[in-house]
Length: 164
Image 1 (cartoon, rainbow, N blue to C red):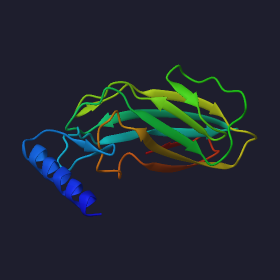
Image 2: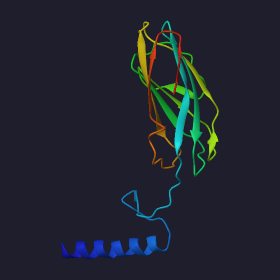
Image 3: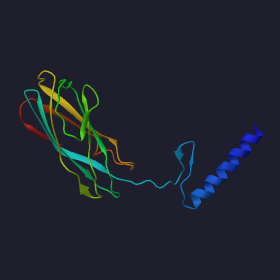
Image 4: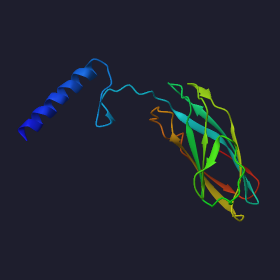
């Protein structure tokens, strides 16, 4: 026990010394206090329309910065199951009965990304569907503001466009 405490104290002294010098050190796979990690504030804006079980989604990713992001992944989760057969854009893939994930591509700091346009068919023709949008992966950047990268939109099967 005494040897273990000495070793831990010695290791802690190294961490404090290295962090104080501005370097990054990891112990047990976790970043040490003061590690330099890029920060980005991702957001998603767009519209969703539902008509006869067909969903038309137009989504524009945005990065409020301060760091650029090489790529990110957005998750689109519907409250109703998707039909088995889907034609998805090349940067999107189905990851469950109700879920599609899409790459955003590069997002400059304080910039807009390329629009993601997705048409999916729901199983049956529900009278309404809720769509949840959130970031699965932020390109290694930390996003401290989840108020704008997590959206929930209720769309009625009326052909009207719901903007978020």
